[in-house]
Length: 353
Ligand code: PLP
Ligand code: COI
Image (tube, rainbow, N blue to C red):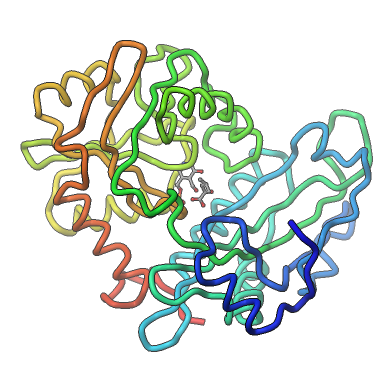
């Protein structure tokens, strides 16, 4: 990225907000804090978005002791700012930190950093269909080459105005089945949002692209049979009889907040959603017979994205008509409507700031 003045001028910002893409443009500020053994969290501040000074021996660079979150701030119709279930991100952040032997962060401190950054950079929230993607993360910044949990960590939140995750707001995506490359195994870190899981999935993602697909779908690491999730999204399957299946949280997939919210919204509609293991062979057979009418991926970045086709070494299958199905469209509309304050949210799903 070219160095730029900070803060950017109004006209520079407006130019950048026209078509920000995903994760390429960053706001003027970032929140940071430090943790050291014996002292706990300290030095929390908001400053200019700028590069870190990092020791070459910092733990994160060698042993990948790092966790992160992904959440969005939305501009509502009345000009307000909305966060969607941010306390869920705070909880998952701490669950990931626990799994990676990292310090816990008080929920209030996490939320305060997010809210302060959003407030100070609120002019960067795109209007219309865009949103401000927030990326909180913690990494081992202690300079030490021994293998043990670090004694110093850096917390940071950066913000990025985003449009659709898939280029051009694709109508549907195609998936490549990773038959031999696993993302996570039993007892591993699959349920944590840590950088290492994504690194482990990149070779399979590259394979998906080589095969002309948008994303990779991972199977379980033991039987190579059960559908788990994509590199950055959970999956739902919609059947002709009106029921849905989403893979269960077995410890090897990320417990998506979008996934949990969709399950709840569907159940409120009286729809039967099973958190049930779904075999890849059944997926192929159900797509072929037409019993599987829709499939969709979901996540903070991807929102709700229809899966149009599945490809593996055995062939290629189209799901429904390969485009967005009725249920997919309606659940997306309901979720997005809640996130943007158009529809009333269940319980305390939205936080106005
Ligand atoms: N699965 C993985 C591996 C992810 O990276 C994400 C994105 O955060 C999800 C699922 C969806 O989670 P959420 O809905 O909380 O964004
Ligand atoms: C998110 O949805 O927040 C993620 O972290 C997934 C990634 C594909 C950007």
